[in-house]
Every structure is written in C-alpha cells, then in structure tokens.
Image (cartoon, rainbow, N blue to C red; front, side):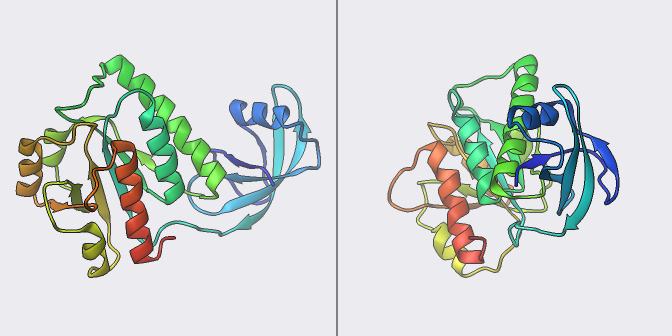
Length: 241
C-alpha cells in the first residue's frame, strides 16, 4: 500500500485534499478512485485512506482507519554531522533516517570544505527536509525527524543539550561498542567530524563541555560511514535493530 507524508491534521472520517506534491505522486503512480493509501503526519501512527478523487492537480481521500504503529528506536538519537563534501550529506541523512535517527544537526567545523552562505544554507535545509520526508515514507516510520539549522560547532558545543554527547575520534582507545554494552539505552547525540576530522581544539572543547570521546575501532572510517556505523552499534546493543 503506497505511503505518503501528509503534514495536515488527520482524523478518521474526514475528507481531505492531499498536498500538491503528494497529489502529483498519486497521479504519477496511476492510482485510481477506490484505491487505498496510507497517510501519516509525523505525529505517530498511520491512517488508511480511500481515494475519492484523482485528477492531475487535485487528489482527495477519505480517512477510514487509524493504525497506532510505531517503529521508532527505544531511545532518542541525534546525528550531529559536520558538513561533508558534495552530495554526501544527502546520503548520510537518508540512511540515518532509515536507521532511526530522531534528529539531524548539521555542523560547520573548521576542516569542513563546504562553506554555506545564508542563502545556500536555506536551500540546503529545504532539500534535506525533503530527503527526511521521503526516507521516512520509504522505511515505514510514522514520525518525522527534526532537522536543526546549520550551526558552528564551537557555538553549538556551548549550548545546553539534554542528550549525552559522544564525539567519535581515532585519538582514544575507549570503545563505543564497549561503552554501549555497559550503559542502558539513553538519549544520545553522535558527533561526526568532516573528511579531515575535528581539530584537536574542537575535540578538547567538546571534552570540556562534557562530551564522551569514544573510538569506532582500529580503522579510520570515512565521514559518510562513521555515523551510520555508530548508529548501528548502538542499535545492536540497545535493541533498535
């Protein structure tokens, strides 16, 4: 059954006009009146709806059944990812959502090659939000992860964070896998550096602000691999797989 993100108030028995982008998708898929679809608005659960009108620019559906399904992780996880080169961020966000990340925090670190102006950052944010919504539709989640504004890593580190911050670094022997096996599931923020890694000054500031400095193992992972591998380690240890 096709699934669509529909950021509107949803309730059983109501007839709604789907957003333009969703309506276009329904039309392209050649769905017909009477076909069933699933709609979710990011607040949890999913509605089964029946199409009542299918036209090129307008699609309507009646909400029939609510299913309180939830496939979220048993803990809250934020991926704080330093901006990588080219389109790597698209791939990282997509896969992090599939693995259960509840929030994405883009970071501007000293060694980031990508430097975003305010205008470019706004366009990137809209693009990344679309990736989050599409990945959520695809993987069966019914809650949409939060996308935070791009922030300078040093400024971000000085802000209060209710989550345990974990910075992954090759400059330590303490293992994320060992740490996760000896601690219960809890809200965490994984900090991933850019291609050249965080600088020693950034790492020291993170440590000073209470972050744990943990390693992923003897191999140096690419920035687009490290965060996803770390999420997988936590999921395996804490029952999120």
